[in-house]
Image (cartoon, rainbow, N blue to C red; front, side, top):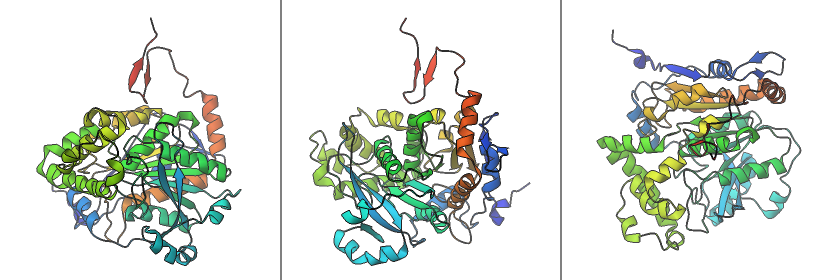
Length: 434
Protein backbone atom coordinates (compact mmCIF):
# COMPACT_ATOMS: atom_id res chain seq x y z
CA UNK A 1 0.00 0.00 0.00
CA UNK A 2 1.30 3.47 -0.95
CA UNK A 3 2.49 5.46 2.08
CA UNK A 4 0.93 8.94 2.06
CA UNK A 5 1.98 9.91 5.57
CA UNK A 6 4.46 12.46 4.19
CA UNK A 7 1.56 14.34 2.54
CA UNK A 8 0.25 14.99 6.05
CA UNK A 9 3.74 15.84 7.26
CA UNK A 10 3.95 12.79 9.51
CA UNK A 11 7.51 11.57 10.05
CA UNK A 12 8.17 8.31 11.87
CA UNK A 13 10.01 8.65 15.18
CA UNK A 14 11.96 5.74 16.71
CA UNK A 15 13.80 5.36 20.02
CA UNK A 16 16.80 3.13 20.76
CA UNK A 17 18.25 2.52 24.21
CA UNK A 18 19.80 -0.01 26.59
CA UNK A 19 17.53 -2.80 27.82
CA UNK A 20 18.28 -1.72 31.42
CA UNK A 21 18.65 2.07 31.34
CA UNK A 22 19.93 4.04 34.32
CA UNK A 23 17.28 4.87 36.92
CA UNK A 24 16.35 8.53 37.21
CA UNK A 25 14.74 9.70 40.42
CA UNK A 26 12.19 12.48 40.07
CA UNK A 27 11.74 15.39 42.44
CA UNK A 28 8.43 13.85 43.50
CA UNK A 29 10.23 10.68 44.61
CA UNK A 30 9.16 8.36 41.79
CA UNK A 31 11.46 6.71 39.25
CA UNK A 32 11.70 7.00 35.49
CA UNK A 33 14.19 6.33 32.69
CA UNK A 34 15.80 8.53 30.08
CA UNK A 35 13.89 6.81 27.29
CA UNK A 36 10.56 7.32 29.06
CA UNK A 37 11.43 10.94 29.69
CA UNK A 38 12.40 11.51 26.05
CA UNK A 39 9.29 9.86 24.64
CA UNK A 40 6.96 11.74 26.97
CA UNK A 41 8.56 15.16 26.40
CA UNK A 42 9.45 15.10 22.69
CA UNK A 43 6.47 15.99 20.46
CA UNK A 44 5.51 13.98 17.36
CA UNK A 45 7.58 14.89 14.31
CA UNK A 46 5.36 16.84 11.91
CA UNK A 47 7.22 18.39 8.99
CA UNK A 48 6.56 20.56 5.97
CA UNK A 49 5.21 18.18 3.27
CA UNK A 50 6.55 20.45 0.52
CA UNK A 51 10.05 19.58 1.74
CA UNK A 52 9.38 15.89 1.36
CA UNK A 53 12.90 14.40 1.55
CA UNK A 54 16.23 14.92 3.26
CA UNK A 55 17.79 16.83 0.38
CA UNK A 56 15.00 19.40 0.26
CA UNK A 57 15.01 19.75 4.05
CA UNK A 58 18.78 20.24 4.05
CA UNK A 59 18.89 22.65 1.12
CA UNK A 60 16.12 24.74 2.64
CA UNK A 61 18.55 25.70 5.43
CA UNK A 62 20.16 28.02 2.87
CA UNK A 63 16.96 30.13 2.69
CA UNK A 64 17.40 33.32 4.69
CA UNK A 65 15.33 33.34 7.87
CA UNK A 66 15.61 36.03 10.56
CA UNK A 67 14.82 33.55 13.33
CA UNK A 68 14.19 34.56 16.94
CA UNK A 69 16.18 37.68 17.98
CA UNK A 70 18.73 36.58 20.57
CA UNK A 71 21.15 39.19 21.93
CA UNK A 72 24.66 38.33 23.14
CA UNK A 73 27.62 39.75 25.00
CA UNK A 74 30.98 38.25 24.01
CA UNK A 75 33.89 37.22 26.21
CA UNK A 76 37.20 36.33 24.54
CA UNK A 77 39.10 33.69 26.51
CA UNK A 78 42.81 32.95 26.35
CA UNK A 79 43.25 29.20 26.05
CA UNK A 80 44.86 27.44 29.01
CA UNK A 81 45.87 24.43 26.87
CA UNK A 82 49.63 23.80 26.92
CA UNK A 83 49.79 22.46 23.34
CA UNK A 84 47.06 24.53 21.68
CA UNK A 85 47.26 28.11 22.98
CA UNK A 86 45.39 30.99 21.38
CA UNK A 87 41.98 32.48 22.00
CA UNK A 88 38.31 31.68 21.50
CA UNK A 89 35.03 33.58 21.90
CA UNK A 90 32.04 32.67 24.05
CA UNK A 91 28.76 34.54 23.54
CA UNK A 92 26.43 34.90 26.54
CA UNK A 93 22.72 35.55 26.06
CA UNK A 94 21.61 38.93 27.45
CA UNK A 95 18.28 40.73 27.52
CA UNK A 96 16.97 42.61 24.49
CA UNK A 97 17.28 45.88 26.38
CA UNK A 98 20.91 45.23 27.30
CA UNK A 99 21.71 44.14 23.75
CA UNK A 100 20.12 47.17 22.13
CA UNK A 101 22.02 49.53 24.42
CA UNK A 102 25.27 48.08 23.08
CA UNK A 103 24.30 48.29 19.39
CA UNK A 104 26.61 51.21 18.59
CA UNK A 105 29.56 49.46 20.20
CA UNK A 106 28.81 46.30 18.18
CA UNK A 107 29.07 48.10 14.84
CA UNK A 108 32.39 49.64 15.79
CA UNK A 109 33.82 46.30 16.98
CA UNK A 110 33.05 44.28 13.78
CA UNK A 111 30.88 41.68 15.51
CA UNK A 112 27.89 39.58 14.35
CA UNK A 113 24.39 40.99 14.50
CA UNK A 114 22.99 41.52 18.04
CA UNK A 115 26.42 40.77 19.58
CA UNK A 116 28.60 43.15 21.61
CA UNK A 117 31.65 42.69 23.80
CA UNK A 118 31.49 42.63 27.57
CA UNK A 119 33.15 45.62 29.13
CA UNK A 120 35.78 44.73 31.71
CA UNK A 121 33.46 46.08 34.43
CA UNK A 122 30.55 43.94 33.24
CA UNK A 123 32.66 40.77 33.19
CA UNK A 124 34.08 41.42 36.64
CA UNK A 125 30.56 41.48 38.11
CA UNK A 126 29.02 38.60 36.14
CA UNK A 127 29.53 35.95 38.86
CA UNK A 128 26.38 34.83 40.67
CA UNK A 129 25.24 32.43 43.36
CA UNK A 130 21.84 31.87 41.69
CA UNK A 131 20.59 28.40 40.74
CA UNK A 132 19.18 29.30 37.32
CA UNK A 133 19.59 26.47 34.78
CA UNK A 134 22.18 27.26 32.11
CA UNK A 135 22.56 25.92 28.58
CA UNK A 136 25.89 25.67 26.75
CA UNK A 137 25.55 25.40 22.96
CA UNK A 138 28.03 24.33 20.28
CA UNK A 139 27.27 25.25 16.66
CA UNK A 140 27.94 23.39 13.42
CA UNK A 141 30.69 23.70 10.79
CA UNK A 142 31.73 27.35 10.13
CA UNK A 143 28.68 28.53 12.13
CA UNK A 144 28.37 30.53 15.32
CA UNK A 145 25.97 31.90 17.91
CA UNK A 146 24.08 33.70 15.13
CA UNK A 147 22.82 30.47 13.51
CA UNK A 148 19.01 30.28 13.27
CA UNK A 149 18.79 26.59 14.29
CA UNK A 150 20.76 27.39 17.44
CA UNK A 151 18.67 30.43 18.32
CA UNK A 152 15.46 28.44 17.75
CA UNK A 153 16.68 25.96 20.36
CA UNK A 154 17.82 28.58 22.86
CA UNK A 155 14.84 30.94 22.54
CA UNK A 156 12.13 28.92 24.35
CA UNK A 157 14.52 28.07 27.19
CA UNK A 158 15.75 31.62 27.80
CA UNK A 159 12.14 32.85 27.51
CA UNK A 160 11.26 30.53 30.40
CA UNK A 161 14.09 31.87 32.57
CA UNK A 162 17.17 29.86 31.57
CA UNK A 163 20.55 31.47 30.96
CA UNK A 164 22.66 30.38 28.00
CA UNK A 165 25.98 30.79 26.22
CA UNK A 166 27.49 29.64 22.93
CA UNK A 167 31.08 28.41 22.58
CA UNK A 168 32.16 29.61 19.13
CA UNK A 169 34.68 27.55 17.20
CA UNK A 170 38.03 29.29 16.79
CA UNK A 171 37.79 31.71 13.88
CA UNK A 172 34.00 31.43 13.63
CA UNK A 173 31.31 34.07 14.24
CA UNK A 174 33.71 36.87 13.22
CA UNK A 175 36.10 35.95 16.03
CA UNK A 176 39.85 36.38 15.57
CA UNK A 177 42.53 33.71 15.92
CA UNK A 178 46.01 34.29 17.32
CA UNK A 179 47.55 30.97 16.22
CA UNK A 180 47.54 29.16 12.87
CA UNK A 181 44.73 26.83 13.97
CA UNK A 182 41.00 27.09 13.38
CA UNK A 183 38.58 24.81 15.24
CA UNK A 184 38.46 21.09 14.48
CA UNK A 185 36.09 18.17 15.13
CA UNK A 186 38.30 16.85 17.94
CA UNK A 187 38.88 20.11 19.82
CA UNK A 188 37.18 19.60 23.19
CA UNK A 189 39.54 21.81 25.17
CA UNK A 190 37.75 25.12 24.59
CA UNK A 191 34.39 23.79 25.77
CA UNK A 192 36.17 22.14 28.71
CA UNK A 193 37.75 25.44 29.74
CA UNK A 194 34.42 27.22 29.31
CA UNK A 195 32.56 24.76 31.53
CA UNK A 196 35.31 24.90 34.15
CA UNK A 197 34.99 28.70 34.16
CA UNK A 198 31.19 28.54 34.40
CA UNK A 199 31.44 26.27 37.43
CA UNK A 200 33.63 28.87 39.13
CA UNK A 201 31.43 31.82 38.19
CA UNK A 202 28.08 30.12 38.80
CA UNK A 203 28.68 27.31 41.32
CA UNK A 204 24.97 26.68 41.91
CA UNK A 205 23.72 26.66 38.34
CA UNK A 206 22.85 23.26 36.86
CA UNK A 207 24.60 23.09 33.48
CA UNK A 208 23.15 21.47 30.37
CA UNK A 209 24.56 21.32 26.84
CA UNK A 210 23.49 20.90 23.23
CA UNK A 211 25.63 20.44 20.13
CA UNK A 212 24.71 20.68 16.47
CA UNK A 213 26.45 18.72 13.69
CA UNK A 214 30.20 19.24 14.17
CA UNK A 215 29.42 20.81 17.55
CA UNK A 216 27.48 17.66 18.46
CA UNK A 217 30.56 15.59 17.61
CA UNK A 218 32.73 17.79 19.84
CA UNK A 219 30.18 17.70 22.68
CA UNK A 220 29.92 13.90 22.50
CA UNK A 221 33.70 13.59 22.65
CA UNK A 222 33.81 15.97 25.61
CA UNK A 223 31.17 14.02 27.55
CA UNK A 224 32.98 10.77 26.79
CA UNK A 225 36.37 12.13 27.87
CA UNK A 226 34.92 13.45 31.12
CA UNK A 227 33.06 10.21 31.82
CA UNK A 228 31.74 9.99 35.39
CA UNK A 229 33.44 13.32 36.24
CA UNK A 230 31.28 15.25 33.76
CA UNK A 231 29.52 18.13 35.55
CA UNK A 232 26.77 18.50 32.94
CA UNK A 233 23.35 17.35 34.13
CA UNK A 234 22.34 16.24 30.62
CA UNK A 235 23.39 16.77 27.01
CA UNK A 236 21.76 16.60 23.58
CA UNK A 237 23.44 15.85 20.25
CA UNK A 238 21.62 17.02 17.07
CA UNK A 239 22.58 15.83 13.56
CA UNK A 240 25.89 14.43 14.82
CA UNK A 241 27.94 12.93 11.95
CA UNK A 242 29.28 10.38 14.49
CA UNK A 243 31.56 8.34 12.17
CA UNK A 244 33.37 11.04 10.20
CA UNK A 245 35.29 8.64 7.99
CA UNK A 246 32.12 6.87 6.92
CA UNK A 247 30.31 10.17 6.32
CA UNK A 248 33.20 11.37 4.16
CA UNK A 249 33.03 8.17 2.10
CA UNK A 250 29.25 8.39 1.71
CA UNK A 251 29.42 12.04 0.63
CA UNK A 252 31.93 11.22 -2.13
CA UNK A 253 29.85 8.29 -3.35
CA UNK A 254 27.17 10.41 -5.07
CA UNK A 255 27.18 13.49 -7.33
CA UNK A 256 24.98 15.45 -4.90
CA UNK A 257 27.17 14.47 -1.99
CA UNK A 258 30.38 15.50 -3.73
CA UNK A 259 29.36 18.44 -5.89
CA UNK A 260 26.73 20.02 -3.64
CA UNK A 261 27.41 19.17 0.01
CA UNK A 262 31.19 18.56 -0.03
CA UNK A 263 31.75 21.53 -2.34
CA UNK A 264 29.51 23.86 -0.31
CA UNK A 265 31.18 22.93 2.98
CA UNK A 266 34.58 23.29 1.34
CA UNK A 267 33.61 26.74 0.06
CA UNK A 268 32.50 27.77 3.54
CA UNK A 269 35.78 26.59 5.03
CA UNK A 270 37.73 28.45 2.34
CA UNK A 271 35.83 31.57 3.37
CA UNK A 272 37.20 31.12 6.89
CA UNK A 273 40.67 30.57 5.46
CA UNK A 274 40.52 33.83 3.51
CA UNK A 275 39.34 35.71 6.60
CA UNK A 276 42.24 34.36 8.68
CA UNK A 277 44.72 33.77 5.86
CA UNK A 278 47.63 35.79 7.24
CA UNK A 279 47.49 34.05 10.63
CA UNK A 280 46.99 30.53 9.23
CA UNK A 281 49.91 30.83 6.81
CA UNK A 282 52.30 31.45 9.70
CA UNK A 283 52.38 27.66 9.77
CA UNK A 284 55.06 26.99 7.16
CA UNK A 285 53.87 23.38 6.72
CA UNK A 286 50.74 24.66 4.94
CA UNK A 287 51.07 24.60 1.14
CA UNK A 288 49.27 27.71 -0.12
CA UNK A 289 49.15 26.47 -3.71
CA UNK A 290 47.46 23.23 -2.65
CA UNK A 291 45.04 25.14 -0.41
CA UNK A 292 43.97 27.46 -3.22
CA UNK A 293 43.22 24.47 -5.44
CA UNK A 294 40.94 22.92 -2.79
CA UNK A 295 37.29 22.63 -3.77
CA UNK A 296 35.87 20.05 -1.38
CA UNK A 297 35.74 19.76 2.40
CA UNK A 298 38.07 16.75 2.52
CA UNK A 299 40.66 18.68 0.47
CA UNK A 300 40.50 21.58 2.93
CA UNK A 301 40.94 19.11 5.79
CA UNK A 302 43.90 17.53 3.97
CA UNK A 303 45.74 20.78 3.22
CA UNK A 304 44.75 22.96 6.21
CA UNK A 305 43.55 20.91 9.16
CA UNK A 306 46.11 18.11 8.91
CA UNK A 307 49.27 20.27 8.94
CA UNK A 308 47.66 22.68 11.44
CA UNK A 309 46.82 19.97 13.98
CA UNK A 310 49.50 17.36 13.29
CA UNK A 311 47.55 14.68 11.40
CA UNK A 312 49.28 12.79 8.54
CA UNK A 313 46.08 12.39 6.47
CA UNK A 314 42.46 13.52 6.56
CA UNK A 315 41.52 9.89 7.21
CA UNK A 316 43.63 9.87 10.37
CA UNK A 317 41.99 13.14 11.40
CA UNK A 318 38.48 11.75 10.87
CA UNK A 319 39.23 8.52 12.75
CA UNK A 320 40.71 10.39 15.71
CA UNK A 321 38.01 13.07 15.83
CA UNK A 322 34.87 10.99 15.34
CA UNK A 323 32.66 10.47 18.38
CA UNK A 324 31.10 7.09 17.64
CA UNK A 325 33.22 5.29 20.28
CA UNK A 326 33.25 8.13 22.80
CA UNK A 327 29.50 7.55 23.18
CA UNK A 328 30.30 4.39 25.14
CA UNK A 329 32.17 6.37 27.82
CA UNK A 330 29.39 8.87 28.54
CA UNK A 331 28.05 8.75 32.10
CA UNK A 332 25.42 11.51 32.13
CA UNK A 333 21.88 11.46 30.66
CA UNK A 334 22.52 11.85 26.93
CA UNK A 335 20.08 12.20 24.02
CA UNK A 336 21.03 11.83 20.36
CA UNK A 337 18.69 13.16 17.64
CA UNK A 338 19.31 12.18 14.00
CA UNK A 339 17.29 12.06 10.79
CA UNK A 340 17.80 8.85 8.83
CA UNK A 341 17.63 10.70 5.49
CA UNK A 342 20.35 13.18 6.49
CA UNK A 343 22.64 13.42 3.42
CA UNK A 344 25.59 14.78 5.44
CA UNK A 345 25.41 12.83 8.71
CA UNK A 346 24.79 9.49 7.06
CA UNK A 347 22.32 6.97 8.47
CA UNK A 348 25.07 4.35 8.22
CA UNK A 349 27.25 6.36 10.61
CA UNK A 350 24.67 6.42 13.44
CA UNK A 351 25.99 4.20 16.28
CA UNK A 352 22.79 2.29 16.96
CA UNK A 353 24.52 -0.66 18.66
CA UNK A 354 26.60 1.68 20.83
CA UNK A 355 23.42 3.34 22.06
CA UNK A 356 22.11 -0.10 22.99
CA UNK A 357 25.27 -0.71 25.03
CA UNK A 358 25.19 2.52 27.06
CA UNK A 359 22.47 2.71 29.73
CA UNK A 360 23.05 6.48 30.04
CA UNK A 361 22.08 7.24 26.44
CA UNK A 362 18.99 7.20 24.23
CA UNK A 363 18.78 7.70 20.48
CA UNK A 364 15.83 9.41 18.80
CA UNK A 365 15.71 9.00 15.02
CA UNK A 366 13.22 10.26 12.45
CA UNK A 367 12.89 8.81 8.98
CA UNK A 368 12.72 12.31 7.52
CA UNK A 369 14.28 15.70 8.26
CA UNK A 370 17.66 16.10 6.55
CA UNK A 371 20.67 17.79 8.12
CA UNK A 372 19.73 20.45 10.69
CA UNK A 373 16.46 20.76 8.80
CA UNK A 374 13.28 19.17 10.16
CA UNK A 375 11.33 22.23 9.03
CA UNK A 376 7.72 22.29 10.19
CA UNK A 377 4.87 23.60 8.08
CA UNK A 378 4.06 26.36 10.55
CA UNK A 379 7.71 27.43 10.81
CA UNK A 380 10.64 26.47 13.01
CA UNK A 381 12.58 23.23 13.22
CA UNK A 382 11.24 20.14 14.96
CA UNK A 383 14.59 19.10 16.48
CA UNK A 384 14.91 22.52 18.13
CA UNK A 385 11.51 22.05 19.77
CA UNK A 386 12.38 18.47 20.71
CA UNK A 387 15.65 19.55 22.33
CA UNK A 388 14.22 22.43 24.35
CA UNK A 389 11.21 20.34 25.45
CA UNK A 390 13.44 17.47 26.56
CA UNK A 391 15.87 19.66 28.51
CA UNK A 392 13.03 21.54 30.17
CA UNK A 393 11.47 18.28 31.34
CA UNK A 394 14.79 16.93 32.59
CA UNK A 395 15.42 20.06 34.63
CA UNK A 396 11.88 20.32 35.99
CA UNK A 397 11.43 16.68 36.97
CA UNK A 398 14.76 15.00 37.69
CA UNK A 399 16.48 15.04 41.07
CA UNK A 400 20.04 14.76 39.74
CA UNK A 401 21.66 14.37 43.14
CA UNK A 402 19.43 11.47 44.20
CA UNK A 403 19.75 9.84 40.77
CA UNK A 404 23.55 9.95 40.93
CA UNK A 405 23.63 8.44 44.42
CA UNK A 406 21.29 5.66 43.31
CA UNK A 407 23.48 4.84 40.31
CA UNK A 408 26.60 4.77 42.46
CA UNK A 409 24.94 2.42 44.93
CA UNK A 410 23.84 0.16 42.09
CA UNK A 411 27.47 -0.11 40.87
CA UNK A 412 26.33 0.23 37.26
CA UNK A 413 29.85 0.98 36.02
CA UNK A 414 31.62 -1.80 37.93
CA UNK A 415 33.46 -3.88 35.29
CA UNK A 416 32.91 -7.63 35.33
CA UNK A 417 36.55 -8.33 34.54
CA UNK A 418 39.84 -6.48 34.49
CA UNK A 419 41.17 -7.51 31.06
CA UNK A 420 40.62 -7.02 28.23
CA UNK A 421 39.22 -3.48 28.65
CA UNK A 422 38.07 -1.38 25.72
CA UNK A 423 38.99 2.30 26.08
CA UNK A 424 36.37 4.25 24.08
CA UNK A 425 38.35 7.49 24.14
CA UNK A 426 41.45 5.91 22.60
CA UNK A 427 39.66 3.23 20.57
CA UNK A 428 41.98 0.51 21.76
CA UNK A 429 41.65 -2.77 23.63
CA UNK A 430 43.77 -2.56 26.79
CA UNK A 431 45.65 -5.72 27.73
CA UNK A 432 48.09 -6.49 30.57
CA UNK A 433 51.80 -5.99 29.83
CA UNK A 434 52.43 -9.73 29.81
